[in-house]
Every structure is written in C-alpha cells, then in structure tokens.
Image (cartoon, rainbow, N blue to C red):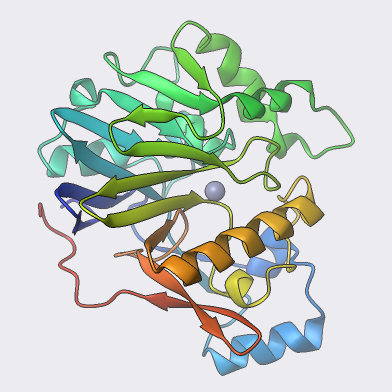
Length: 285
Ligand SMILES: [Zn+2]
C-alpha cells in the first residue's frame, strides 16, 4: 500500500507520499534539542496530549502532476536511511508512478532525509530521466566543516559532487515548471527552500523543514540543533507564517503526519497550525 494522501490544488493532482513504512515515534528532546524553556515545552506537550519521548512524525515528499510532467519534491533518505525509512520508491509504485516517470525532482535542502533518495547505494541516479532542481544558495553546504555537526553537511558533501551533472541550480523565485516556484527560506540550512504550486487561484507551499512540527508554528524561536542559522530560521518562519495566515494557502511540512497538509492561522499574538481533515488517504487517489 502506498502511504500517501491525495489532494487537489486547482487543476493539479497532488499527493503527500511518505518515505517511511510507518510514522515515527522519536525522542524529540534527544533528536532536536529544542531551544525551548523546559517548563514552557512541558506545558505545550501536556496541552497537546504529546510526550517528548514518543513524539510522532513522518517523512513526507510531495508528488504532483503538473501539465504532462511529474514533479517530486524531496526524495526521502534512500541508502542513508534507517530500518523505517527509504520506502519512497515503493510508495510511488503503489500510486502507479515509477522512478523513471519523474521529470523534475526539487530538493528543499541537502539533509540526508531529503536528498538521500536521489542516488542508489552505488551512486547511480534513482530518477534517470529527472532534472534535479536545487536553490543555488544551498551550495554553501559544501563549505561547512567541524565544529558544525557532520550530520548537517555529510549528505551535501557526499551527493552534490556526484550529482553535479544532473543538478540544475536555480535562483530564489525561479519558476521550475509552469506555476511552480522555489522560494528561499534560509536558516535550517543556508539555502533551504520552500516550493510553491499554484493553479486556478489555489496554492500549496511545501515547506520542507522550515518547521518540524506545529509547536514551531506557535513558537517560531524554538530552534532545533539541526537549524544551522537559528536566528535566520526563526525569521524565515515568522515571514512565511505571516504570509500564509494572510493569504490562506495550503502548507505541507515534510515531517507532518499524513495527510500532512494544513493551514497557518492567526492565534492571539502569534500563529497556530490547523491540519486539514477529511482527506482521503492511504490509497492511489
Ligand atoms: Zn528533514
């Protein structure tokens, strides 16, 4: 079965497709080391019925049919994953889409769980007919070194040279397919981008790791240890939250639970995450 959820954005058929066999239950304090005041975090978790040591998340990519092209945003972990991840190709096949059908793969950023699925363990292209689009600002990942934690740049430094003749670096705002633009949202990495799809007045913004979870919608400054530039990450979040709440478009974060999409809405002085319910999920939509 394809772990996916179908939704329409204007005339576009879109699917959130998971890379994982099942949703994860991570120890979020160990994993993320959120820059949150402990009492405030504890009270947020309890108000939301969640536990820090079994925190639910998924690993979502976006598949969309844009005209006669197949667009994939992010590629999962591939050979860099663990026992639960790296099922994207199987889940795409469950939707009747083969790796060779994909025309464009846009990558939100070069962490292993987003770019890892573009190459096999032998360094061969997984999507043989695809152009791989990356925001040019992400090339900065190549220059990182210790004391920056290696997990923040290992995949970039392994993959970007191997993908050199397949990557199409694009500037902020570039239209990569009709109605599809990349938008720089730096901070998590220097060249982190969101991808905006637009059709018939409807819009969907795939936000990658701009925020991991609804708690970072309510607390934009609760950065994780994986946010390379924390102040800039918080600024990018605030900017996108204002815009999304003002204009009411759909948002798909990479680590939300299926069906994954929702909206950012105003709440008091700030914002909160409003997931979309009543969407078909799990089948070939
Ligand atoms: Zn991620």
